[in-house]
Image (cartoon, rainbow, N blue to C red; front, side, top):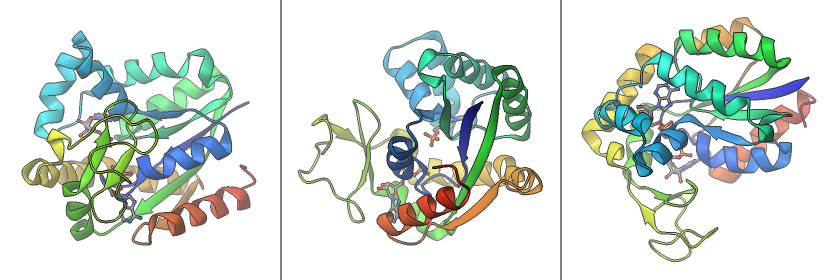
Length: 220
Ligand code: ADP
Ligand code: AMP
């Protein structure tokens, strides 16, 4: 049976940051829908052109497009044992679609860590986020600075500030999260899979809580 972990939490909660560590520990590929969209924008694909219009405004890319993209990604060979999902699902329709996909893949969501962080902290986190061009490693100018300014510690690539991390877009993204994604907290709670983690703690402490949860769940 394939194993899937779904990371939930608002934009800036620390999903991508934690995913890098958990993915290694669990030996599951880190699948970030946002990273796939950004890769498509970089490569100027049709999907990238379509997604960009929504992303620049802080809106969600339509469900049909996003679901088709993830379906394609989850059927690739590197996902043969499952995956760590970051940023997908983000709407009830996407969560239903994931359940259907997993039926045909003989897979199961085994845990849903939910990283909770108050809205006031999210703005500061996103305003100070620096992302690596090559593979989406994230840093923060104050909370997790790179060793050398402007350069990724892991692969030496350039760090940049995402267009959608501008204050106006961040406010919209948080609203969109509240309206469209928070119903998933209840969805996964009802399924007995949700485990809340206090995301206000320092990065290493959040990692420790997440690993403890996964170990307790016998998922590691
Ligand atoms: P998400 O993937 O949920 O949008 P990220 O992992 O990209 O969030 O984190 C957003 C920003 O907050 C990044 O700049 C990251 O370095 C920083 N960050 C992540 N976790 C913490 C934390 N526990 N405390 C302080 N800053 C954090
Ligand atoms: P993220 O990298 O997760 O912060 O996502 C950046 C942007 O990509 C979001 O604001 C959306 O526009 C788009 N996006 C990422 N994942 C999804 C998804 N599951 N559904 C719809 N849009 C998404």
